Amino acid sequence: MVLFDSVTFIGVVMKGKVKYIKYPVIFLCFLLYILSECMLSGQSTGYAEKSSKKREGYRYEALPVKNRDASQSKSIEMNIDYADSQTIFTMKSISDKEVEYITIELDADGNFASGAKNVTRSSGKSKFEGSMWKKQKTVYAKRRSGRGQKTREFDLPENKSLAVDGSLLLLLRSFPFDQNREWKLFLIDFSLRSVSGIVRQAGVETIRVKAGEFECYRMEVIIHAFVFRPKITYWITKMEPHFLVKHRGKIGPFTKTYITQLVSID
Image (cartoon, rainbow, N blue to C red; front, side):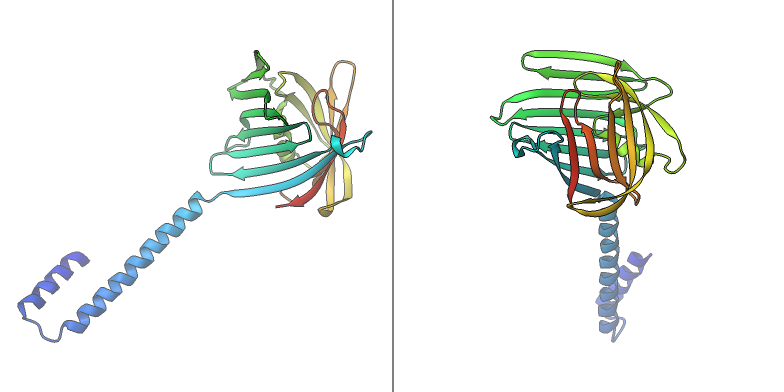
């Protein structure tokens, strides 16, 4: 409708049938320009907001409990990226001997979808490659170490929550805090091993680390491995988004016991 009126209006001017029309035309053009700029600005802003992602970034240091040698330390970077349809967790662990990189993807409901792990020696040579993906009630896993390659399938139990390496940290965020409850877990790692366990809240403590002082939930994970019952302790903040402040326990099936502490928040 605006376009039709404008064309008619300009035609009248061209024929010279209307006098003193110069300034109204300029004003109309200026008004249309302002409106178009506002519309384009609104479209670009909406697109930016829709396509933007939220990121959490944390840095940690980990030392073996029984050996404080700096050569045994690990520097750990964790990032959590949120999009409309998925959450991506990445963890990079650096030591003198190797670099370990883990990526976990969760679906829109926060459930494990897929993951990958790569370990590279300090020389740059690949040491380990692993991947996992979930289809309905089954997790498929593959690993390659040296010249060997193995695959395995895991049928997921009905009454246990699935956790794959770093995804446990995100799973703990939805724990029913302060309700005296326990969760049953089914844990899988990239070495193609699975164990059962339980997670429970063991109290509230104030924890001081290099990044500052935080009031934390003390969360304990008890692993049911043969005749052993190793315990892993996580201190996560009471305030949302319940990020990790401190950790004590093994960081792999055959590793030493480490203490990991938050150094900084990006």
